Length: 417
Image: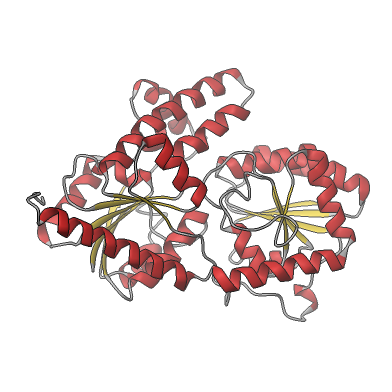
């Protein structure tokens, strides 16, 4: 199998859920298939990642581009200028001719079995590329993620912008999913949404995995033992749903927990926390905001419970099975746990409103036997059913089916560009 893989960014460092998922899948798939990758890359910021990408794949082509930094003047200028564009900003900024040209040049020089677009970001520039077959991996149902963001927004101007963004996203996402030969989703919920919203049948579900050898229960080192009353959240803090989750948690949930357990504490782990989050956290007792860390495991090991209080989002949260693999009790909102096949009260606890979320957390912090039982059941479930080897085997099966279907179809008279 020879694959032309289009990525939005280099996969190193694997500091977002999407990168973690893609790196674990494609690093393993590259040992079985010949993968030639192309991605956007920042000339300075991604310099260290380029050799690692070249070592992992049969070839790697960086398309250099310096993206506007979030919340910078250039960023806001681009957002304002994009309001008249038919594409939402997050896709318009990726719709670049030199990326499209790089992919087409690779396809012209070599014979590939399929083109694989990781995320909608890389599929949009290739909409007019008539290569067959093309596969798009939807790590989120992107319009739904943005619609949920619009639904919870209170500030009138931001709500107006978010409303336009999700409607634009739905239009282009429908076009991509309808025109590509196959669509991959990360959960049954997402698969059903894509099928029903866009009236398509060529959608398969690829489950979320976890490296259960890397993420495992902590050893007996006192530094790696749970600290009484300690909570942890892990996630890229430059992803809006994660920031929204922690602002809501600090404002609505954490004070209730502290009222019941005055010695409770919280660590927020993840890259690029905003000044808004840092300021709020600084005004709340016993809260640490770490920023980027080299390894999340030492922080998870010190948690008595892991919280995932997302109110907006899509896809599935890799942070949940990773915490479960370390035998941690996880408390999530319904959206936080959406798409994951874990049972409330068995491998996870789920609560939505501030009062109920706080009550569940306090119950776990006070009841060690309940906490340990949920953590042990969670670890057993991810070891049994969520290893990356099973995910990659499923990916291979899907791609083989796509190629086989295309061969049968073209053998009946269809032309292959």
